[in-house]
Image (cartoon, rainbow, N blue to C red):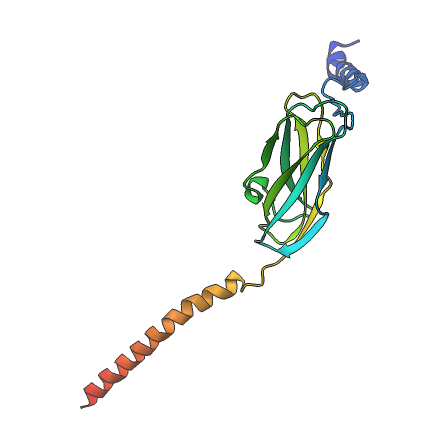
Length: 187
């Protein structure tokens, strides 16, 4: 066979076949937990006005037979529909809370303050992980936030009013001054 055919045709095809047959398990990671840590949330939905604050609570419980390792609770938010970019740091001043060991049968309650920045529908949830990496994430149920638009005048309607109102008295003064000059000129 010609060396060009081997290097340009057969070798690339053989490489593709070899790569496609190789199992991709080196990067796979499975999150596991024995079910002894549970997370509940105090409500499933809330409706409010964009810009309002809401506080919700999660309860992290140890239903197992032994104490948990120290835990980390992390708040997150996602937009349910395409639209506004949601940055969790902007929505909550306290995104991460640290929990000491929880003894069997005990629970820890955490409060979360959320500032709804935009109108729309959002999913808020809390994920628990072990500080010692001994088990994978346990997620809370989702809190659905529906934020209605703020009924304040839209900015494109406010700016013209804010500019015209202060100019109106100035325009009256200029007209009065002009008419006085005309009266003086005719005398």
